[in-house]
Image (cartoon, rainbow, N blue to C red; front, side, top):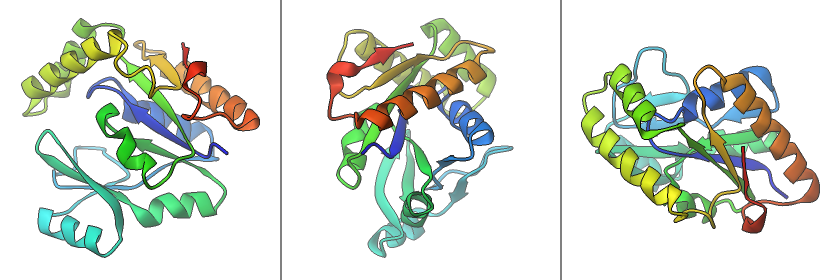
Length: 200
């Protein structure tokens, strides 16, 4: 049975904002805690900074499920957070790069994959520019490449639901994700049945 959601999409598409909105308005959904090697940004929640050495040791100890490197930053998903959420009967929500989906599936298969995309490359570039991060240029280049691959259908077999994250419509997108998840959970459909992939 489907009992977790993975959110994929290029950096700047709005995955974190979408997850935070869902968690704030739907108590049955929770953001899985993440460890990483970069400093926390202002207002950033649900994450904690560790050194590479600390994070690798945590992986060896089973405190994180896996390690993934993206844009020079090492990330590790909290084992306790993920299974704690599941044990409370809640729905864990995880941010992942589309290229790393299979890493999560090796430890937990019963998931829906939501792909969050911006309305256009231009808007993605604007969002990254407003974000003001030091590696903005690299993130924009990687995001544009990913969107090109997405538009060519490279990830079709991985995605259950597509969300075009329009400016000022985050609440609407959040409602659609929750509604779609509940529908798929009822019929037992998840990432194993890609032919049901839907675009919103």
